Length: 262
Image (cartoon, rainbow, N blue to C red; front, side, top):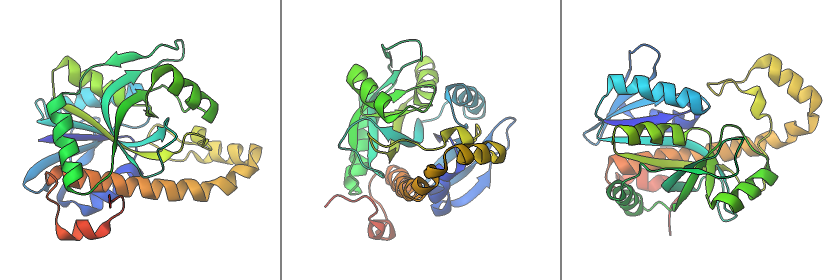
C-alpha cells in the first residue's frame, strides 16, 4: 500500500479523476479515497493546510495503514529557486523545517536514497522534468522578499507548509518517504489572499469579502494564480501516475505531455 498525503482537494483533483476503482476511506478523522493503479494499491488522504494538521492526520492514517510500502507527500509549493516555473516538479532530496523564531533551519532526515532514485527513475522514464533539492517547510505563507531571504539562509529550492511534519513521522517509524511537489508560485510572486482560506483550502466567505474590500487590486492577480494551479495539479497527476507505473506509462498519458522533457 502506498500512502499519499495532500493538503486541499484541488491539489489532487486531476489525479483523482484519472484513478479507477476509487472508493472513499472510512476511518475516524480522515477523508480521502483508495484506488488501484497499475496493480498497486493507493490510499490518498487530505490533511488540510499547516504543519499541525498534517502531523495529526499522518498519525491517524498510520492507524489505518501502519506499514505502507511508501509515503508520498504531494501538493503545491512555492519556488525559492529563480529557475522554477509553475508546474515544475520538485523531488526533494532533503527536508528542512524553519519556524518563525529562528533563521536556522532544522534538517529532517527521512528520505532514503533508494526511494529517491526509484522515483527519479520513474519520472525520467515517463519523460517528466523535475528538479532535486531541499524542500523547506514553514508555518505560514511568506512574501516574495522573505522567500529570497530564506533561500539565502537555507539553500532550499522550494517551500511549503506541511512536508516536514509528514517526513518527521515517517522518520520516527523508519517508513519509506518521498516528497514530490509541483510549483505554484515563482520566486518573486506574491500569493494573494492566502488568509481567506480555511485549514482545508476552502475559501472563507467573510474573510474573502473583507480581504477583497481591503485589497481590490488582488482580483486582477487571481486569473494568473488559477492558471498556475491548473498547471501544477496536472503535473502532480502526471508524476503520481509515473510512479504508479514505474515510469512505463500508458500511451494515453504520454499524449498529455503537460510537463514533458523534449
